[in-house]
Image (cartoon, rainbow over all chains, first blue to last red; front, side, top):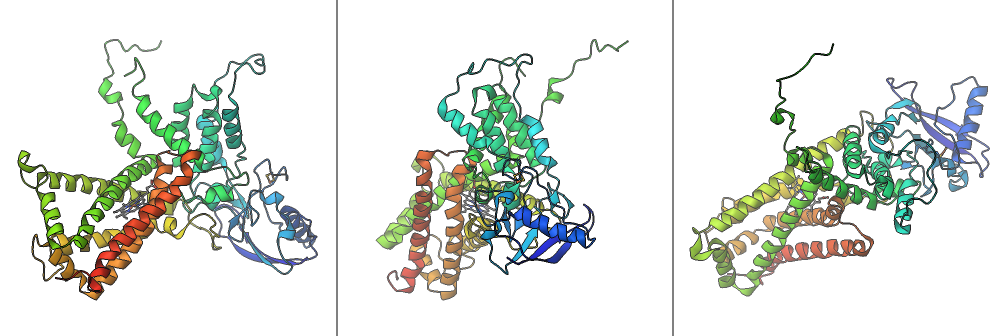
Length: 253
Length: 245
Ligand code: HEM
Ligand code: FES
C-alpha cells in the first residue's frame, strides 16, 4: 500500500519544527506502524537524508518507549494498543497520516518524534518504591495478598509509562500515570507502610510538571493498557486522607 | 569539631508549615476537592431554589408567601432576614472558592500543553463538549447570575420591579422576549455545566466503586433534566400566557 506521511521534524529541543511530507510507497499491510517508519527511514538513509527520530524498544507493547500522535490520536486509531502494535492494515491505500510528538510542557521534544519523559521518572522516584530488608530473597507467599487486591494492583501495574495519558489529556495532566503507580503499591500489603507519604510525594511531584485533572476521561481511552480512571479517584481519596492524617501522627508536633 | 547549639531552641512555630487546609488547597488535587464540595453546595442551592420557584405555578400568593417565609426564617428567635443572609454568605463563599479554583486550574491547564501545542486537531473519544467547555459554561453562568440578581433580587434590570411582589416581577421580566432568550441560553449552559459536574465531582472526591458508578451517569442526567426543564418552564409559561397577572 501507499500512504502519504506528514511528519513533525525538529532538529533539537530548542529549534523550531515543522511538518515534512513523505511518500511511503509499497508498504506491506502487515507491517507495524514502526516498521513502516523504518522503511521510510531506510529510504531517507539511501538518499543521504536525516532519518526520522522516534523512540522504540520492545516493539511488543510492553516497554512504553514508542508513542506518537497519529492523526490527533495517541498511539493511533486502534484502542488498547501501543504504536508498535498498530498495523498498517488499519489504514487505507492513499491515506494521509499526520504524525506528531507528544505535546506537554513536562515532555519537551528532544528531536522529531522523540520526547523527554524523565518527568515520569521523577514521579516514580518520589514514591514508587517500598521499604524492604535487603539480603536474601524472602520466601514466596510469605505475605498473603487477597485475590481482589492482587488483581486490582496488577491492573494498575500494567502501566508501561508511555505518556499517552498526558498526550491525550486536554489539560496535559498525568493523573492516570501517577494514580496507576500509586495504586499499584497502595493496594498491596507491602505498600501500606508508605501508603500516605507515597501519595503526597507523588502527587506533589506530578503537579510540578503536568496539568490538573478535569475528569474528561480521555486518558483511559488513549491508554494502551486501558487502565481505568477509577485509580484516579482512589488517588484523590488517599491524598485527602494523607493530608488529614499526617499532622496528627501520635507523638509528633 | 562540630559546633554546638546548646541553649538554642528552634521555635516550633517557625518550623510549622502553613495551615494544612491552605497547604491542601494549594495543590491541584486539593482545588478539585474544593470545587467538588463547593459544587455540591451550589447544586443543592440550585435544586432548592428551583423547587421554591416552581411555586409560581401554585399562584401569586404561594410564591409571595414562600419569599416572605425565606426572609422570616428562624421566626422570632433571630433578627429578621438574618438566616437568609447567613445562607447568602455561605453561598457566596462557596461560589468564590469555586470560581477561584476554576480560574486558577483553567490557567494552569492551558499552560501545561507547552509553548508549541498540537498542530493537528485532536480526536476526542471520551471528553464531551460539556467537559471541555466547563470554563466557558461556567463563565456564562457567572455573567447570567449578575444579570439575574439585578433583574429579580435588586430590580435594577427590571423597570417594573416591585420589592416583595415576586409573582408580578417574574411575569413582568419574562414578558420581554430578549430576556427569555437570554434566560434559556444561560440555563442550557448551566445544564451542560451541571451535567459534567454532577458526574465528575464523585471522581474528584474519590467516591468511586463499581456498584455506584453506573448510577453516577443516571444521577447526572436526572439532575440536569430537572434543572433545565424546571427553570425553562417558568419563562415559557409566561410567554404562553399560562402565568399572567
Ligand atoms: C450555580 C453555579 C455552579 C454550579 C452548580 C457548579 C457546579 C460544578 C460542579 C459540580 C463541578 C465539578 C467539580 C469537580 O469536577 O470536582 C464544576 C466544575 C467546574 N466549574 Fe462550576 N459550578 C457553578 C458555577 C461556576 C462558575 C460561575 C464558574 C466560573 C467560571 C465555574 C467553573 C467551573 C469549572 C472551570 C469547572 C471544571 C474544573 C475542572 O475540572 O478543571 N462554575 N462546577
Ligand atoms: S516499543 Fe515497547 S511498547 Fe512500543
